[in-house]
Length: 606
Image (cartoon, rainbow, N blue to C red; front, side, top):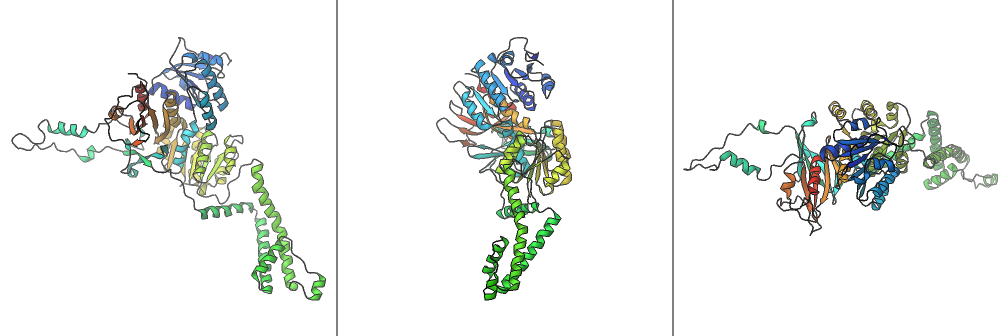
């Protein structure tokens, strides 16, 4: 491969297209979103057509061209017609590479919409200010809340105006729900689920009655009542499967941890320094001798406070011995047995001092040497995170911020997440040993959940199966890309969940590329629900539409409205006939295709 690039560049001049730079899983999902749901022409720029997902990308029917270049150079951007493109997505390179490519693209086309992946979100926000029309997103930050919530068995949530939206299923659905988002849920056959189906409207019941009774109504002329048609068998009318609804939490749930448990764990953590049987025997013998000598001192003097004072000085080696002149004059400390007791305490203090010094050096010096802390014997009720890449680091930090004990596992000592979790004091198990041994070191038997989020499906599945073998009650959450693989995983294991980072992040990247602000994603099993905020601009096709127009075709539910004349967000606004005006804002829950339909409507001009 040369820097000149080779592949399948556009044969004919192309314009008004979208460029995706990358050949990873996120790029693959993003391209599917663009060609299937937004139906826009896509040109793909990859570093190697034979690696990662590039071969599958080439087979997609909606892709206009696949161009291969070693890097995103000026020549590569010209080869993909950057000057006439509508949007550019940078989803594979490092933060520095993506920043450089974004600034270069803006120089070629100042009006192009640029969406770039950034792990450092703070830096991404600053770069956004340098771009005329750009957005920095983090795929790991978008997907991490779903993994963390799945590990705790909680619903993932998205914050909107101080409220947290989450998905509830079946019996967990309450009367104050916002809307039903899915029905016909069958966990053994996820293909049957209906996500945000078409709305029948509020008049559907009246239409049904009119069709049933006819124009005359239930009373026939002459006063004879018309009997309605016999009702069908309720068992046949009932929709099979479960339901899912969107609900609001007032505050984000946090995991409470009792301070007594924290103190007990801290005390038990110190026991890991006494793993040698010989050391334990020596220290226990010395402790018994100190207690016996303390008892002798107290018996001879009958003053508990003074006895404690003398014993501590003796342990520290600071006691004042009796002199011969003191003994002859009768001013000694208390006779022969008291002197023996003090000698015993002083000798035992010599045993304790180096042990205490070693513990202090190990605790204080391990962080300065850059070494991660190992999980201690007091680690209980924790979550094990396997893999400290972008996603694993985000998941570990989020769980830690929620007050949940976390233990991380990583085989690569150069992984970027090790330093981040070490700064928070999160234990890390490192090494290339078999998973069984590593999980034992991570105290699997005392854990509540395992989250496997490495970049390889097989590795994640292996970690999950080893964890279930070592602890049948542990909850496992696995990062999987293949849908079929995930479906078999659901059918085989109980108390388990699978998530795909690219599946969760791609809709947000696609919507951002189209200029839509996606606030977050919620998972309905293996399906994705987008929570987006849209503003009605002058000339937008949304002007004049009401809730019926937006919701009836399916795929969209308007959950909140903020009118131009009011700064307050109104949840479940009851007037479904009020038309949108310039300056209004709406918050919607939408499928990918539903949000694509809104995007198509929004760009239409009157």
